[in-house]
Length: 405
Image (cartoon, rainbow, N blue to C red; front, side, top):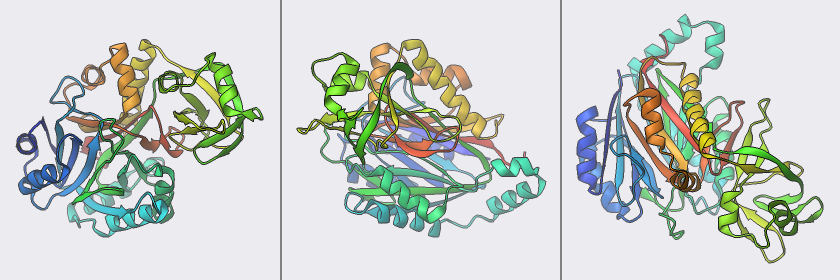
């Protein structure tokens, strides 16, 4: 039904050959590669082995898979997917730093246009729609969009708005921003080619049960402030005072450093009915006393200082995986899990001695897994709010079971 292969190695050829043992000639090949490796060589070596398979991925701040015990660097992780119940299209939008909205529109348009016809998948989807109850049909989403935007452009929200303007809101969006192992110089995206300053979309139309999950390892404190002046990713004032002054008071520090920012992220409640906290990570302090964040911070929202501990890190990640399983319709057999994990969350788990791969194995067994440490994560909250997040994990889960079951 769904054949999945996984490989991870410092040698791209070895990684893809290992993956192909599990899947055969794939419909989709996912590449998460260290920026220490030449992206063109990585792509060329893998492309030679997968032929006409669609390819998506990017460079990372660490890559991991079910082939290893923990996140590694200087490797390439590959997942190959093959199924008669899967249709795939890949699109690319270039110039994401200059015109991210049009970049998003172009990428998703090209992905949908290039969707390979699959009569088997179409037939199963039709049968599912005929046999499912009305309540079940309301939960189904016809397409899943995996996105890999450039993680240094700082324009993920506008890129996603471009995507949504073209396809509407009744589709899954999940992904992660490409990285470069914390060099912060240049990242690359794979989308049936090698790109920089681009956004890539892989659209999956499938008769398989597919779901997504979203979660972060933080809980709210009783400390916070109202954002009284902001624009985009910059917060100028909190409680009608300079953001820098108020933030130092809230955290009880004399100086706001990257270490302080990563240790105490802020949470803003989502606008949907669940009101989940969405994490916003501060990037730097500006000379005018404002603070720039790694994601947009809406004016008049309430900023809450967030805390964490080892137990909560573990339980929150379990919940993220379980939510993805439930989102997929609780398949009896899981075919594959793809994880987009913030590099700051990864550093937190390293400090606290938490192993995400071990948690997955204990929760669902030895299922094929691939993921990378990102410069930002994209996905949906439980209430359906679609956004760009920080210090978060977003998950795509494919069941080895068709939706008509």
